[in-house]
Image 1 (cartoon, rainbow, N blue to C red):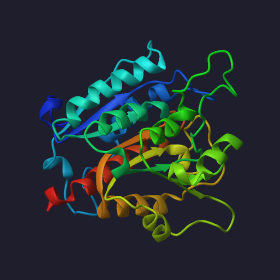
Image 2: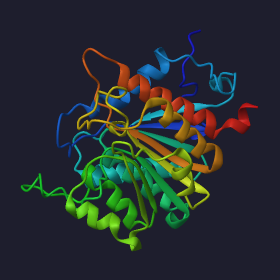
Image 3: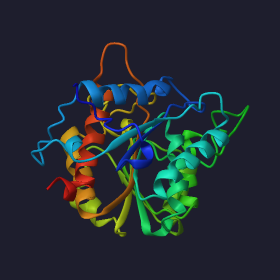
Length: 295
């Protein structure tokens, strides 16, 4: 029998539920993220070695993993987010771990809201790997016809309004309104910008996380486009692959990961590098999250 990372068809009984949110209604540049979740799942099943090099075992032999695909394409941003929240709440309320696969970055707010009903947001730091701050109040500066507070460029502003402290890593571009927002100490946001000769150390980032509980949201454009070229709004520079892997695994090993997502994968015609990288990140994160079960 061919192995599959999806080893149970009953999400309600799984340790982990991979929730696919193929949505891109507010995409502002090259589209294609609606195809991201399917591509990531395909790589998880057909491209990855299931043997984990860190723990010298196959996590799929110990962990039960289910998949739930949501139908969102025809919905408004508000209704799409409500559907994501409702679905994720089912699993969060039963202490199952939800890993959300986007889709554009706006989908993360659905899981933020679901988790906020179980955990006090002030006690959960959201670590965001991203080239962009996504702290706009609305997307009206580039979508004046139908501005929305629930666009991908606003998702961390909305998350911060829920009470989540933010640690933003890999930031390489922002507008004045975002600068003013994250510069206000009342908003509890720490920004690590990527500039020539000014890459922060991993220890500096780890020390900035002040809560035991964490949530990790990865927009793949946070990585250098050499590693993650398939995304809608790439920006030069960014996290080097092994730096990013070390940072992420150290965060998980030293904190309680309550939720995670990977977003903004826009598959390319002639390369699977981005979805493969996203799949590898997800699988490694899950192994470290459940490391005590693997021993």
